[in-house]
Image 1 (cartoon, rainbow, N blue to C red):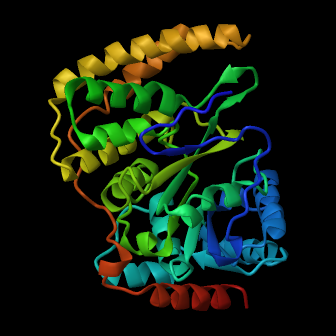
Image 2: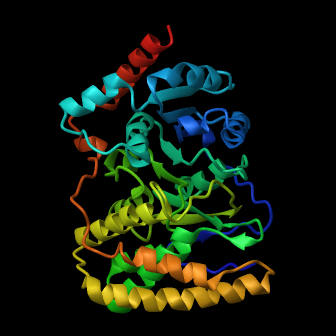
Length: 364
C-alpha cells in the first residue's frame, strides 16, 4: 500500500473507501453490444447501479433490429431511470449520414452519442458493462474528485486474475510507448499521459460542461483520445485518478479481427493525434527503436513482479507481443474524430428522438 501523488491528483483506497458523492446529479453511461445482453457481468453492473441510484443511466447500445426487442425488454426490468440509446438504429444512422458524420462504428461513437444525451446532467460517468468485479463504490469514487474541484477523473486498477498479469495492451504497448516518448521529448502532454497509472482504463467521469466539449475517437482509441481531450480541457490541475482496486473483465486475443494487434493501431493513432494537437511530432523510426528498449525493460520488470507474487509470466510471449505492437508506431491515420457536441451539426435531442422512434417501431 502506498500514498504517492502523481502530477494529477491521485486518490487511493486505503481499505474499502466509500466516499460521499453526488450520484443524484450524475448520469451513468454504459456502452453495450449485443454480446453483453443478459450476460452475468452486465446483469451485475445494472443490478449494482440499482443500489447506487444515480440520476439516470444511459445504455449506449450497438445491436441489430432483430435483437433490439429482447435487449430493451431485459434492460427495462431494472429499477432505474434508464434510457436505451440505440446507436445503430437505422434512423440514427440516417441522421448521422445526413450530417456528414458517417464513418466507422465502434465503442467511441457509441459513447459520444451517449455523452450528448447525458451532458444535461451536472456530472457524467462512463464505464464498461463487462467488469465482473464491479461494485457500488465505483460511481461514487469516480464522482468524488468532480465534487471537489476537478473536471475529469479516471479509474486505475490492477489487472490480475487466473494467476497471471493481464492488461497487456497497457503494459506492453501504451506504457513503454509513453516512456519512449518521455525519453525523446520534453513536452507537457507526454508528462500528462505518463501521470495516469492505467491510461487505457475505460472508467472515467467528467462534468457536463466537459462532456459537451470533448471530441471523441470512433472506436478503440476512445480512452487515450479522451486523455488527450482532458489535457486540453482540464489539464494537470483539474484532473484526477481514482483507485478502483482489482479489475476483471473480458480478455481479447492478440491476433485476429478486433484482437489486441488491431486495437493497438487505433490506440497508437489516437495517441499520436493528441500529440500532434499539442505540437509534438515524433521521429517514428527513432521512437520505435526506443519503444523496443523500454518494452524490453518493462517485460523484465513485470517478470520479477510476477515471480514475487507467484504468478505465471511468459517473457517470450510478451516479447512477441511487443513486436506486434511495434508495427503500430507510425503517423496517425486520417482525423475522423467526432466533434464536440457544442460544435456538432446535430443535437443530442435529435439523436434521442430518432432512437426512441426506432425502438418503438422495432418493439411493436
